[in-house]
Image (cartoon, rainbow, N blue to C red):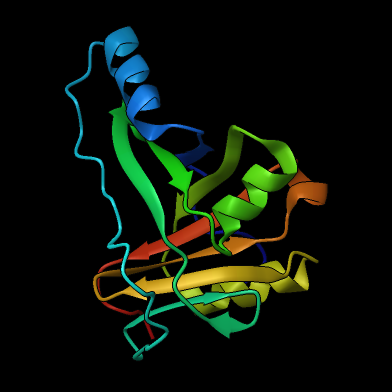
Length: 159
C-alpha cells in the first residue's frame, strides 16, 4: 500500500461545549430535522472487550464515552461530540483546543493495512474501536495535517 485508498471525505467531527445547543443551531441554520442525541450510560464504565467490540485509547482498552449526534450535510456527516469528563480523544482535544474540528474521516477497506500505512508515514495510532458492524481509528496527525485523521471501515472485517 502506498496511499490511503479513498480520498472522499465522509465525516467531520466537531467537539462542542453543549451538544443540545449546537444541534439546535445547526438544525435551525441548515433547516435540518433534529437528530437523536446519543447519550452514553453514565453508570460505571466497563473495560471489558471482545475481538469485535472494543475501544482502545493510548495503549489501554477502556471506555471512551461522549455524547454525540450526526447531521447529514450533503455527502458529509457532521458528527457533533460533547465529551464526558474522562479520558478520551474528544476530551483531550477539548482540554487542548476548546471547541473545534477534532477530526476528518474517510471510509476505507483494509482497516489494519491502513493503520500500518499511517504509522509508517509517521502518524501513530492513538485510538481505535470496533462495534460489530464497523471499526474506526484516529491517528496523531495534527502536526502533519493540522487535524486528527480518522479512518473507518464499515461492514464485516476485511482480511
